[in-house]
Length: 138
Image 1 (cartoon, rainbow, N blue to C red):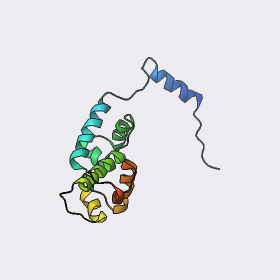
Image 2 (tube, helix red, strand yellow; image 1 turned 90 degrees about the vertical axis):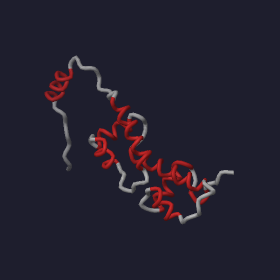
Image 3 (cartoon, rainbow, N blue to C red; image 1 turned 120 degrees about the vertical axis):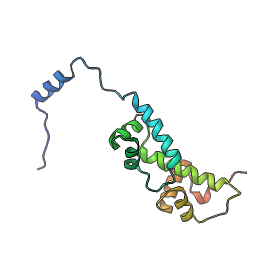
Image 4 (spheres, rainbow, N blue to C red; image 1 turned 180 degrees about the horizontal axis):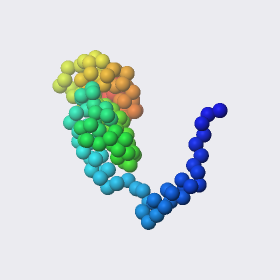
């Protein structure tokens, strides 16, 4: 039998007393600013393979959880924003007829993915198709 947590009536009353007169908890206004600052860093640093939620939160001097809440309030996640930026870079590369063709593994590395599998998964999520079938601009 596992441990089951039951909130006591005394704790409920204490919590109600502490929160009496306070407005309901909402997403802080600074979350929008934090989200915008984080997106700017992602735009500028998404090719760095070490960029992840923890690294980004350290750069912004906030906890990872606080950063995640800022993204959740915008219907997104930190990891998906990084992956989407990397997938867009890959699509730009594939669309550019002036750049030489390279392997999917090399493209993944160039865009900041740790593997070609990560590139394929993110690309499919963002564009609905695999990079090998991505149509080049006409």
